[in-house]
Length: 290
Image (cartoon, rainbow, N blue to C red; front, side, top):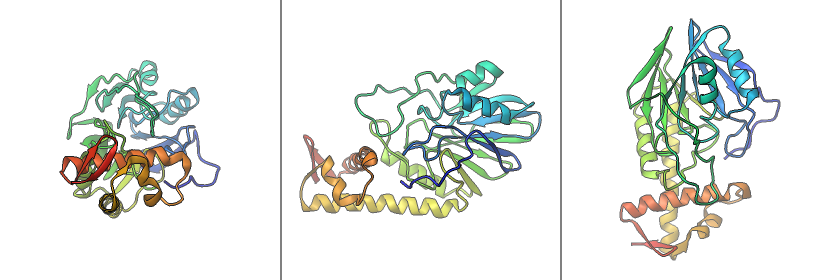
């Protein structure tokens, strides 16, 4: 994970990033959100949709409504239900009457420290979009692209009029996505990367960090990076059986201590996938090759 760019950041400002899309940055920076969650406002005609309303913070919700302006907010779309993405949906829907659509509800009990944001228990969609289903308004159409992996309910949204894809946390230019079992699944994540690589989207707009202007090149690199990590894990286990914390030192040189839990969960996700494929096995809390 890369550190954020130097301040000032455009928190709370409306940034026009292409004719149909504006962006509003939430005030929630962290090692996992970079400069914060980016809410996208789609449309320039009579109505608007927003993607990933972000945290339920009055400052951010007010900035979103300023970006919507005099237009009618008709749809609030959520890529997934981590708390840095969806809690703003309910208060915005109450204020505007907009429909909450997109990913399915998903709430898991927290069993210990997490490496990412916990799930949003307030999220209640009016309509869940299956893969390929769409919503539309005055001059815009957003189509759901199912991309499970980071979470089992993760969706991307394709803006058909411009060739842009809103990728949530599935693909980001500044960092690889955190995969946290049991809901996060490395096998699903890799399949979803393959699916995006087969598409021909013009540009990606992730929920955190800058736009990705060469999408297929980045996705190809991400697939290669994950496969390299997988090979590294297998080589380490060929040397000797290991417990989960034993992978960090040889695999992540100079790791920020704040990211150790995320790195460990990523290794765990790889191990579960390798176990499913019969490459490794576990005995208690120790892993070894089969």
